[in-house]
Image 1 (spheres, rainbow, N blue to C red):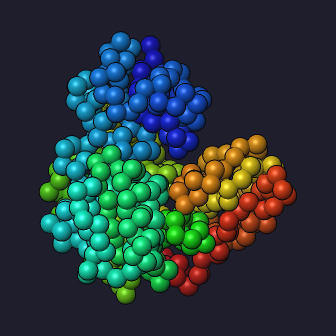
Image 2: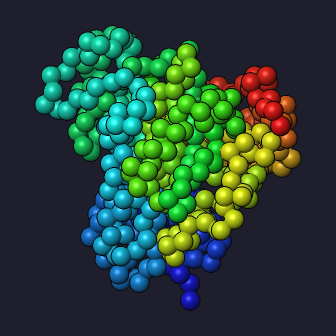
Length: 430
């Protein structure tokens, strides 16, 4: 008899998790309020229920005799995921402290302060607060809701009038009714991230990567155009920041799960922000499966059903230097409009260095104006790897020369293409 697994969330990235579970012979039950949510397409069963409706979801789980519950690629659903698992007595990788620390920007700031991890200077505002520019932080400022992800509700403010209007508007994106105002880390900063695996209470650094962001979208949040693994800052990070994060993880009693943490790097200082205690939209797990031979999606699915996370040989397979190879994710970002034609996708998929493509739109779909400046404007994430940075850079050029996406006026819809990475930064001592 098939095991039954509830998966919370319906976005395209969660859809890939559903496909993996289905391929493992599991009966998937996707829960999302949107009847047309992409993750529902290939699920065994679906329910149009809000992910925060704990009692309704628990009732479905009992009625269907489910064996496990798992959250997809959605920060805001980690807290209800824990509450549902608790009520059902099922395995859950999150505890009260980790939800407080990793699932809201204000909680993370508090724990960074406690464990001497530098974060981005900023203040919190509630609807009762007098809205005025923070005295100790110069314009421009980044304004964001504390409890949303994917760039939703985020805006750069360059003058005081815009700042006050933006703060008033951004409250509507926060369930908590709290807005974070931070120093805007501009284009002079580098942007990198690290990805951890927690197995049996041990934090393993599994990947490091650099991000290149588009800044051609006015004052909306900059969105990634691509990433490269390992990061040029890997050695420096391992020496400077990893010990402090490890102390934080110990204090939070993290036993199981995956965590992504992003950093701006300016003048050799790491400014930590935006933790994600779940599978990522960036999906480092795709590169890790291809190069290191373990799949976080299968590990999390098995954990949800059995309480066991990962094989005994995990520590031998784990290698944040990617076994001497270079990996790269290429994000294709679109302008607003209707997608009239897509050319070259099959050729890109058959490229020797392309391992996987996450597809979010198809011909005839419309990219809405309000999605610009959020990850909803991403058409494809293309996962590539090669023996060196030279192979990755050639693949980036090949993708750019192959893909063509046009709108109904015959205009190119791609906002900006990822440029090849600076080769000397990514030649590591083998």
